[in-house]
Length: 110
Image 1 (cartoon, rainbow, N blue to C red):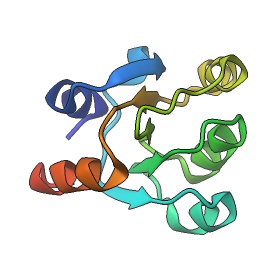
Image 2: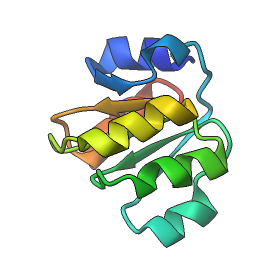
Image 3: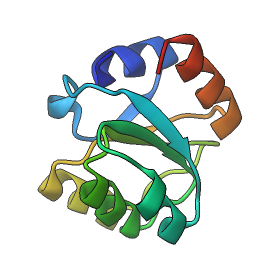
Image 4: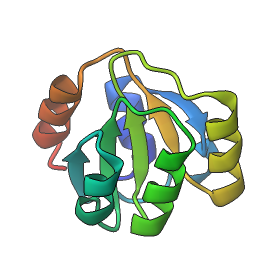
């Protein structure tokens, strides 16, 4: 399933990378500790976090993640959004909790 379909079905907000939304997603990781996420987020994974600082872009870029979903109504700062746009990283946002998002992604086969 591609990120565009995920965003539509989960009613996610795009903060960066909407033009890249055809990227496919094949798995999911939930975590806020960046050092752990660096070892767990895999290529084409959706990464769910509440972190909003610019370092999330670096982690997603290293892993070649499908996208980042910022959960619990957290909003990435302007510097993070700008860096994501520069590096071609999709950042989405949701009011749902990380758990709720993961359950819905699982139900969608991610």
